[in-house]
Image (cartoon, rainbow, N blue to C red):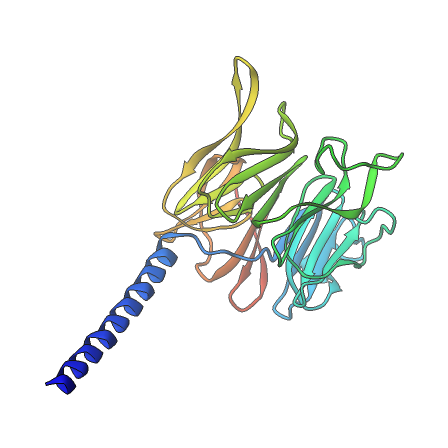
Length: 312
């Protein structure tokens, strides 16, 4: 009788483990199904110059900063083993597959130039504004670099007599995602709190301020994602002056790229006129990234980069 009881107990115990494991798997699948996927920035642009990571994992550049490369077909290879790229008015930064951060042009202001300069190791995320960049280490620490004329680096960061700052400066830890506006930085904490510092339009935050909660990711610029909904950071006028808030702008979001969104039914929308005004566009379903500029650049599953013209 005792042996039978032990046997039954073990059977119930094993069945409960199987059920709990299956429930956890279903929970993970449900979360993955409802929330947008995290995508790595493989295309970027700024100052009439474009950057794209090709199928060979080489970062290519073409445009104004590379006069020998007028278009995608004649693009110049500038970094091997690249996995992530971001660009702005002053140039480009990129991460390779070892987590090393590289800077091109003027973000390392003591060594400007069109070819890579090593900045730091152990990096997993980057974002670029007009005159600054912000990056995230694998330990969840945020650093900033560049100019600080509008508190892009917070008011606590001292700059040299030229108003420029070159070395990376630590700002805060416990961060899971980052983004940059023209003159500011956004950080998403591990607990989903969204912070901003810098200058938006009229509003200035010299140090990080809380502007939203329970967010999941910061895909680019002023866009933030909560479950399957897309929000934007917006400036509103109040009796006490301008303030920052978050505003929901699109539902049923599956993938969020730079200026382009894919909804859960497979349709693509581009924010061509404004970040909260969307126009439906036609794109291939097998893309892994899309970048909106004066043209649309896409990266497909096979790693090929294509240019697509669009009309307003």
